[in-house]
Length: 117
Image 1: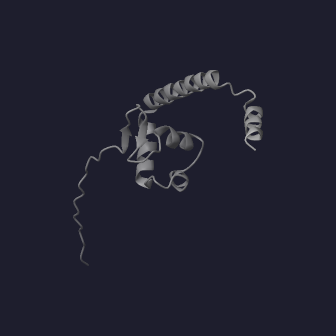
Image 2 (image 1 turned 30 degrees about the vertical axis):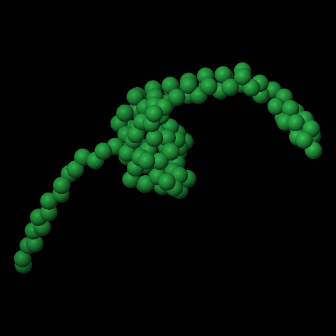
């Protein structure tokens, strides 16, 4: 009986991360508008990579897995980034609410619509 021996060479290549920082300092996945925040939040809420891909069809499945792996390897840094993004969003929301007074907005919009009839 003859033994078969297979010899295969696997080239391990380092691929660039599919993460890019835009001009506003927001980390986006690949060339898409989808943020790191979006993918990580979906993952933390229990979505699988495939489910995230179904929700955000511009993302490649391999990139979603990469982002999840990146998060798991750099959890403290990503968590700090996400916390800062939440802080910034809260500050912007507060500033907007002070400028545009959301209380009574429905009544103001309805009154404006009535004026234009």
